[in-house]
Image (cartoon, rainbow, N blue to C red; front, side, top):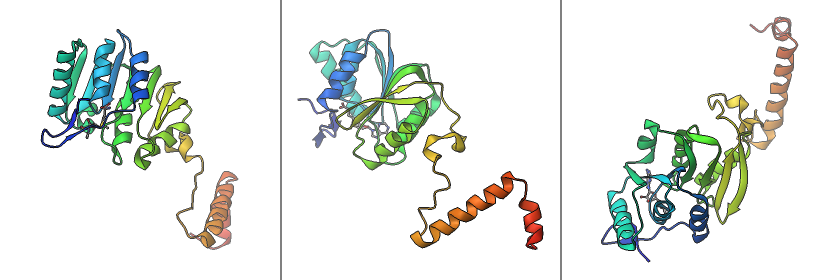
Length: 225
Ligand SMILES: C[S@@+](CC[C@H](N)C(=O)[O-])C[C@H]1O[C@@H](n2cnc3c(N)ncnc32)[C@H](O)[C@@H]1O
């Protein structure tokens, strides 16, 4: 099996799960536009599918190994392109619409979320998003966030990769109140247990007064400015 990762002295194999490679093979078709963060076996599968596929990786070595492998295996890679650099920089440039995005690049926080941030608006409604390695807590954060959003639907899990469909137009991500992940606001769980209940009651009382337009009169009554 080829090693696409690591250095020539210390080769590594960080291959996606076989079932994911099979999923990509079955899903990607000529005419589709797809993008992945990270490079390797999934790039070879994307090349052989004939989809118009972009691989984003900071490693030129990986891309050279993938090209060499494809050429030696007789896999046509004319629709496979590489965008070299860390994904947070490459993807910030934007680009055309996508039918499928596979997030499997840098796994530390906040990279999976940044990959999503820069690609989600490019994904068409009905398009597919794969979040790899959700057994890693920093990848799982993205998975958990999407579970709560109304324009994303979890279709299935393959091992520790989640596969979502974008079911509606991109939401305004600056609107934190509109995000399902913030439905439990105010969340005082960062406080010691004994002070949580008091904080929450005070918050509810203040909100009720504000809703009734009584904040100012009550403050006047209590002599608070
Ligand atoms: C788990 S491997 C990807 C495996 C690949 N999907 C496969 O099937 O072989 C992670 C990849 O992320 C790449 N990577 C590391 N940092 C990155 C970054 N900042 N942006 C994009 N890719 C990055 C690595 O070079 C590596 O190709």
